[in-house]
Length: 282
Image (cartoon, rainbow, N blue to C red; front, side, top):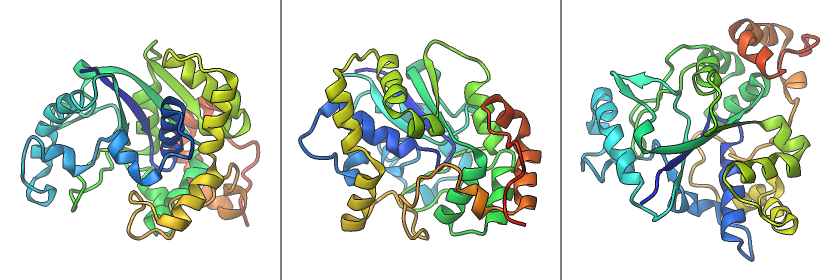
């Protein structure tokens, strides 16, 4: 029995890419890890199957307070699925729900938090939700934002983009490793090598490079094209859509950029995300 290592982020920030890389690095397969096996090889915090191990009712029969009170028991159960530490994907903020912590620190070994420029998140998240960019910007700015219990998934308290970032990163800790999506793209070998070292791994350069090749965005897109992806939302056309840095410059209007900066300027400034110009389309 191990403890939990959280792979945390606001939605559409690179969390799934990180999970695929870690599996390709640790398992060292001859072919890319099947993206449709991710939920079997790592845990996902909001997946209802975990909750049914401690309460057989489907999520649609649970109220939000019941989910909150079940969560520590679910996290404890997750520690039993492998003999070593368990990677767990979460979009929850590091806060409480009905007085119960969303992240159970008693069974936690550490966390990797992935942060992405909210200007790009707004574009990607709008496609994922099949909502307008304006509606997505409003959702990203909503304090205490949460998903609902639906078939297959329990509620997660994601918070606003700023709440999610601040609750996870405001207090640096040796067991917390924060990475920017933009560095994952621009300085791939250095950034992913740093993730490996944080986990106490010293993989040879060729193994690290191999894991990155097997986890490339092109490989993930091709897998989804051929076989679909079970974690894609029902309303989205694709999960692995673009993965680009700076897409906001042609996708957002000046007004939309201004609203995102107004909502999240303090946290954007911490990570170098404040635009030197307001960019966007007229």
